[in-house]
Length: 285
Ligand SMILES: [Zn+2]
Image (tube, rainbow, N blue to C red; front, side, top):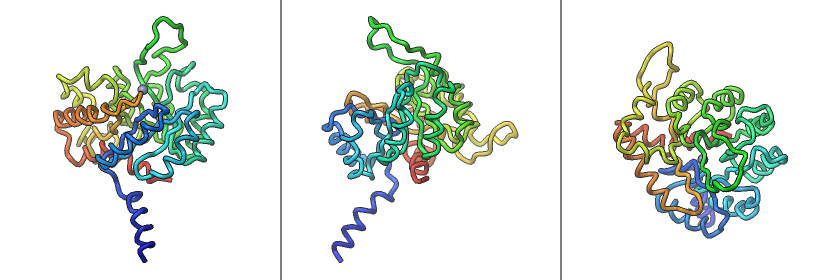
C-alpha cells in the first residue's frame, strides 16, 4: 500500500502546472550548476527549459530523467554543424523537447540549407528557440563570420508558416525590432517571444511603451485574428541565464513583473506568460 502511495506521490508533480516556466536557461556545462538551479526551481515551484550543448548530452540526460518535473531538455545545436540533423534525432531520442538557442548562423535563418533541421524538429513536435536581433561581440579582436542581418526577427515569419506544427520562440523580442516581432506573432499562432536580454533594462523608464507593441487586446476586427486573451500573451517568460549566473533569474522575474504591471496586464494573462502558455505547449505530444 505504502509503496503504491509513494509511486503516486512521485507521479503527481509531473502532472501539476508549476508557477513559473523559464523558456531560456543556458547550461554552462558544470554539473554543480544543475544542483543550484534545481534548488532555486524547487523554491519557486518552477521549471526550466535547459539548453544543453551536444558535448553535455550524456552528463545531463540522467539528471533530466530524474527531475522531469523541474527540467525540460532543449538541444543546443549549431545550425551549421554538418551533423545537425543527426543531433536533432539524438536529442529527441534522449527525451529533449526542443532545439536552441539557434544563433550565429552562417546564412539567414530561413535559408534552404537549414530546412532539413526544421523539418525534422517539426516531425518530432519540438520547440525551436531562435535568438533574434542584436548579437554580442565578446572578442572584438578576433575576426568572426557573424552578422545581425542573418538573425532578423522577420525571418521567423516564413519559418512559422512553413512549419505549422513546430512551436517557435524568438528570444529577445527581436531587439530592437519589437514592433515587427509582435506583429508577426499576432498572425502566427505557433510563434511566441521571450523578453530576455537588455530590452527590459533599456526600457525600464518607459514600460508602457509595450502597450503600443502589444496593442490588439479585445480588438474585434476582420484585420486581426480572433483571440480571447491579452495581446501580451504572445510573450513567455525567459531569463537567458548563462555562465551559471542564477541571480539573473530573480532579476528577470522582477523586470517582467514591473513591465506587465505598468501595462495593466491581468493576473490571469500574467499567469499564462509566466507558466500557463508553455505548460500547455509541453503537454502536447
Ligand atoms: Zn540569445
